Length: 154
Image 1: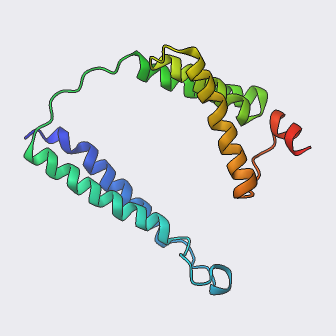
Image 2: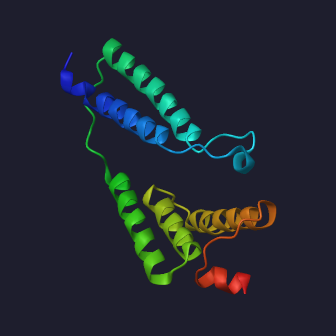
């Protein structure tokens, strides 16, 4: 067994323990604020315990079967990372998340091999619109102000 294979599980384990330690430093909220629900510290601890269980499973899989070498990532992976950078640049320039999401979704569909432009365009328009309407009408959550949301919210 190569020991460098266990660097990632070791890093994830240390990360989980640091988050658990930091979560235990949070003050407990009074019952009049949270009632019978979960404390602020409980959720990150819960996630890190799940993370530790998954790291244990990963280490066991590494022990049983040595993984083969991973090939270098191809163009769609690197271009997706570039599109996330473009997403933040568009948000910075336009100031609106609902301008950036359709543009990046459309380009990502084309990058990952969608041959039909109308499918990528439909996905890029319908998905953010559905999410916006779900949050606005059903969950009654308002999104941060931006160019399009200022028009919508008035």
